[in-house]
Each structure stands twice: as C-alpha cells, then as structure tokens.
Amino acid sequence: MPAQKFLNDSYIENLIINNDYASAAVYLFKSQLNGWPLLKKNYDALESVQTESFWFGGFKIKVQFNPERIKSTSAKVDESSIRNRKCFLCLENLPEEQKGIILLEDYLLLCNPYPILPQHFTISTVEHKPQQISNAFGEFLELSKVLSPGYTLVYNGPACGASAPDHLHFPAGTKNFIPIENDIQQLKNDYGNIVQEDGIITTSFIDDGLRKIIFIESNDKEEIKKTFKLIYQTYDEQSGVTPEPMMNSICSYDTEFGWSVIIFLRSKHRPECFYKNDPERILISPAAIDLGGVVVIPRETDFLKVNKEMLHQIFNEVSTDKRTFFLLGKKVKTELR
Ligand SMILES: [Zn+2]
Image (tube, rainbow, N blue to C red; front, top):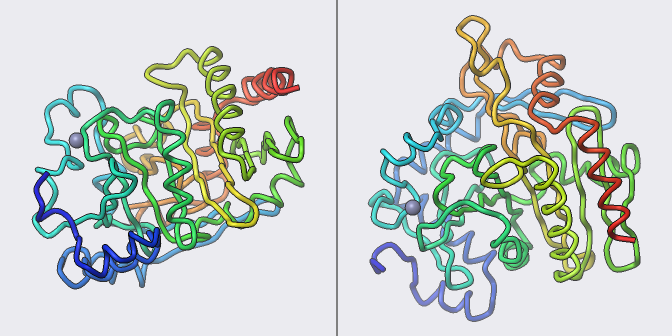
C-alpha cells in the first residue's frame, strides 16, 4: 500500500489507539481542507448552497441546488461504462492531495470532495471488490458505531445509487443532518407497522406515502444481523433482481439506544423524468441521502422547477410498490414470531 496515501502522524495514532475515530475524522477533514484546494473550494461553496424545504404529513424533504454533484448524479453505471473507466476509489487512482485513515483494517476513510453534507466522507475498502451489502452488513454496523459520536453511515445498492458499483464503499457524514434521522420516530408512530418487538429489537415497516422504509432499532448487533438477513433473503426471493435486491440505508449508533438502521426499498434506479429530453428532463437520481430528505439537484433549472408533486411522483416511482412492501412485511412478521 502506498504510504503517502495515509494520514498517520502521532496525533492520529494516539486518537486511534483510544478508538476515537470520530475525532480522527475531524482531524482528517481539517487537514485535508488545508492541503487540498479543490476540497476547500467545494466545502466553501456548500456553505452558501441554496436549499428549499417541502413539508409533507409530519416530515420534511429539503432540496439542495448543488452543481458540483452533476458528475455523480448523471454518472453512467452500466457494466461497460464501469469496465472502461479507472476506478476512482482504488488507491492508485486517488487524487494526489487525497489522504485517508485506515478503519477496521480493511477500510479507508476519505474526504468526499463533492459534498452534500457539511462533513462528507467516503469509507471504501482498501481492496477493489463489488458493492454488496450481504457480506458487509456487520462491518456497516461496526463502522457506524466507531464513528458514532459525530457521523452517520450510508449504503447505496449497486443498482440504485452507488456511483462505484464495483468498489465497496459507504458514504458517511455529519450526524442528524439528514432530516429522516430526526423524523424517524415520528414516522414510525404515524405510519409504522411494528413487525418485531421483544425488548431487544424493534423492527417497523413504514409507508409514509413517499417512501417504503424498514426501521430496525437495537443494541444487539447479532439480533440486527439476523433480522436484516431474513429481510434481505425474503426481499431477494420476492424481487429477483441481480446482483442484490435494491435498497439504500442510513445507519447511526447511540451509546444509550444502540443502532438505528433505516432501509429504503427500491424498485428502480432513476425516475422517468431523468431520461426525458429538455425541457421535460429533471436531473434527480435518488440515493439514500435524497430519500432521507436531502434531494440533490445539480441543475438550476430543475431546482427552480421542482415542487411537492414532483417529489411525490419521483419518490413513489423509485420506491418499491405498496403490494410488495405489504407482502414482505407480512412474511417477515410471520418468520420473526
Ligand atoms: Zn476500485
């Protein structure tokens, strides 16, 4: 591994010895802001980014006009496009100024130079291997725990929002910035159907009219893994999509309450309006952060045009349908009993 790609001075080493990864992340972020002009420029721009909020029944969806995200929003992620490009998460292709911190031996914490969140990271595997949650879910939970005081973790499936479907990675960023992190208990109360509750773990299926959400809460990692595995397998049989059933996730950890895992079930990658010709075209390509309530819009014309009805249409189109969601909830409830 090329040593110059790692930030490992004595200050960082000391934080890591004490398992203080959240402080190490802050230190990496500040150090990269000083040493990487593109990063500084894009985080400065984010501070004055235009946003607008839309209120639905008891919850909020923000739209963010963010021109720097154009590449990611319009990224071609089909097999041949991926094969014919250099993987931007592989160590040898990282920008010269970029440095990272090793997490849990196999992962590298990197600053994302095209941010949506006030501090926005990418946690990628050191090794180039496919984006797949089934083998990495335990690590997803563990990484969210070690970064928990300050950050939330995100997962985007290879066919529904990951910009590198060939290289395993988790976006991470400022905790409680994504509206659903604050809204989830209310969503559970207003729209939730509890399918598992035994004092150790609570699992709810939530249909809020825009999204199809599964919400798992527990302090017990093994119980969460068991429930997730059952949901994954049932959903996999039901949807028959390869390489994995379509989902996005947002995960955070709290020392008192444990993990909060929010899963969005998907039916497709992009809404129809994405593929239309201008002026009908709207460049919105929803992934976890968008579904969580920060919808990224890279073009100003789209930002000025977007309204509640469009968001309702887009969210419904890319989310799994009511019937599939209902049947999945029913099956999972029976199995968990
Ligand atoms: Zn790679």
